[in-house]
Amino acid sequence: VYDTCCRLCGVCQGSGRHDACCAGGATEDKAAGSSSAAEEAEGEAAALLAADYALELRRRAFDFQLQGDSAGAKQLLADSGEQLELAKSRVPRGSKLAGILEAAVHAWRRAEGLTNDNDSNECVEDGFEERVDQELERLVAELEKVLQETAPTAARRMPDSGTGRGSSAIVAASTALVPHCRFGCGRVANTSKRGAFDTCCRACAMSQGVGGHDSGCTGAATSEPTDALVPISTDLVPLSSAVEARAEGHAGGAEGAHRPEQPALGSPAQQALRLLALDDEWPTSLTTREIRRRFMREALGCHPDKGPPEEKAWRTTKFQELSDAYSTLEVQMAILERIRGPGVAAAAPEQGAGGAGGAREQQSGQSSGSS
Image 1 (tube, one colour):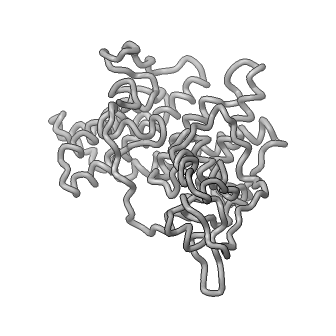
Image 2 (cartoon, helix red, strand yellow):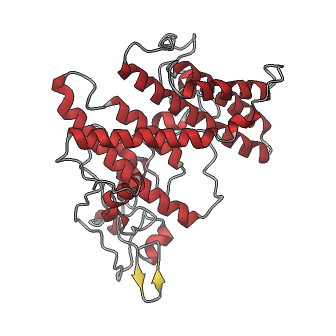
Image 3 (cartoon, helix red, strand yellow):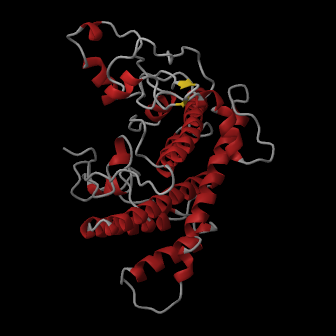
């Protein structure tokens, strides 16, 4: 049982392309060159997301190669090339990215032996990833600006005073920085004279968050609201396996009959992941780039300036929720990466209908590969 309708849909992450044999019927891409400024901006964003995904697929392909999985690496490289082709087809012809994407596709084809010319485009990949990162950060900043202009009373970020977009994100998520137990029980991590720990108590650490707590556990869950997250919409929050496990655990014993301290929504990071329709396991195996891509797709889909006037209210509210969730995850991922240290690879992607790199981010986190 797969979580995608066909391989091509998994590879393009639900952007509209399908295999000819797909039960939903094959679809064709829109012609390059948009008819309006709004469509051109949307096409540029879609091209950037596809290019970013291609880079990550290529990166993970090299990881697979180092691990001795040549077949998996070959599949991921093929998917990476498809994403570059998709990015090239979607970027508006007048965009400044058109040239660099054209060169990147050409370099990839030559590297894979699909072209025999001797043009020297080796240097195009040197700064390609940095350029894509810069452009994506620019688009995220533009989305935040739209939010502040559309709903200034609802925008919770303090204006950036020349220190970059990251500073405003950290201000927004400052109340979510209270260290919580890493097993997701919702309690605050224990701090004492002996030092700071990443769990609330020994019993919770032994049961990995699904059992009880020491009688002297000092990390009681707080009920104070934070300004880094908005209330979760029930129609947007899928029931997670983590919540189901806690609901069924210890059902027959005294401890199962009395669980007043088990929160239903988990930690702020888990709430944010669910709001972005990602797997809410924490610590997560998702990368910051995967989370950013999901935020970009969701935010562009509910942009306040899109749709008829009667939709502006809910679009603005949803846009705010997504922006706040992304800010929380941005900071929490930075903390998680510092704890893990440099060079710690994410979990290996799962196989699915979308190939080696197509299924995970489609529904509950992306199984994307290296660039």
